[in-house]
Length: 272
Image (cartoon, rainbow, N blue to C red; front, side, top):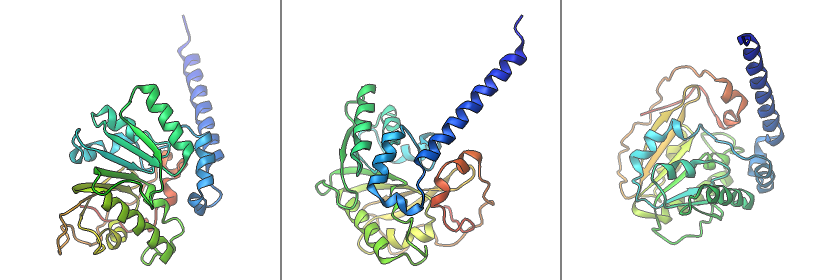
């Protein structure tokens, strides 16, 4: 008769070994400073080593929010796909007309290889600069970014008064997204940026979309913004007041990951 205690010890040892390997891999790709995230060379080197990483939780945590806004017939642009499997998960939910872009040719090649091996033939991937999107006006029903815009804020300084260069880059990104959206298209932004920081840029007079948001996440609160083009009103549908959320409890996977780097002002948050 087999000893169940021996089996338990074996499983525990294997789990510890897997955790140590995962920790080692994260240490190998983690940047020396937050500003390194702005270096394209860093991302090429990282994507050459790292097969998969999900910023701001995986698809299962916000799937219920995303599917409210993306019918299966939608043409979708994912900006800054990296090595996320967001496109794969949307495809499995019946959203197949997907174009993924990233500044890193390594990330794009890896994605092409991955979706090809899965038979997801409709997913397209191309190298593109999110500050200068190479698409015609009114091309997509939905544009989605997950953590991509947050990278532009890593060295922005005071979150209430970001540096001029940061604002210039963020506005260039948003102008491009607004331009390639169809007249009633939707921009989805998944972010750590709280609404009182995002509102001044999302509601700039250049844009015709309205801003709504939801939150998700167990420890950190992540924000799921939806901005529908052509629905701008003079009065925001959600107040810009600060609400008291439960105190932040950092779970082990979040402490070991890199999401916390993008969190500013942990005590100040808002939600719908």
